[in-house]
Image (cartoon, rainbow, N blue to C red):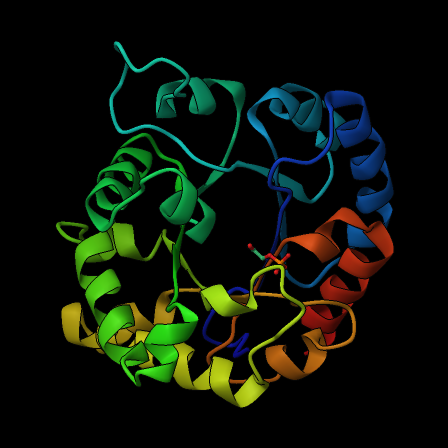
Length: 256
Ligand code: PGA
């Protein structure tokens, strides 16, 4: 992290976990461990938990995000949620293009781009996920894959909007597997992403964008990952469901 240049952001991605009552209980445990944090703290929760989550964190430093949004303002899209619906509730962030959505729900770079632009237009801050599959890494095309995702996912996004966007580098092979990228691997790709952003926009814009690492980040490895210059925070799945572990990651980001 380079806090002089960028805001560190620790975000939990709860995925399909926690009913509304369980969400309230977990947030009540997260609020005290997040108090006074020297980084932004976000919990991205299932849609049905948003109302109770927003109510529970009111007046605290914990922010709430959704895990997806649709690109249309309204219409015949059964099962989808629009950015206007999220915005009216008071949601601030939204995860877009998570690898699980790409893998199981047909999300493509084109739909990621449409969702990202819709989120920005509505005043939501998108957390756009990119990352290579294991076989892509083994074929030594990680940089090609990431460069392509950055170009397509941020197509037609202005520099001003890009600064409101968080990029989460999540190597797909490290998600939920317990296999974390080493701090050097994470830094290498996060630095590459920043260089691509500098090419697409300019150096000043690239330096202003928060780039998170995600993939089995936990209380034991967070400090080392976050010590890297271009790793500005984390998108955390499993460990964000345990307040003590999430708190330890917030502490690491505060100290780092
Ligand atoms: P994990 O998930 O921390 O459980 O690996 C990270 C993510 O999918 O955002």
